[in-house]
Length: 44
Image (spheres, rainbow, N blue to C red):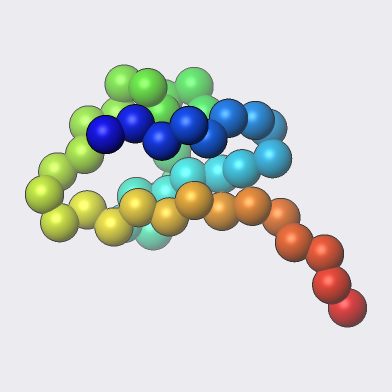
């Protein structure tokens, strides 16, 4: 299934390895892969 996440504000990782934005559409997932969607946070 596709998630509707777009923008330069996020990063994606599969099994703790970053997936470059240019490679997301073609990246092949395997059963058991752990997907992380990361976004910047402010705080202090």
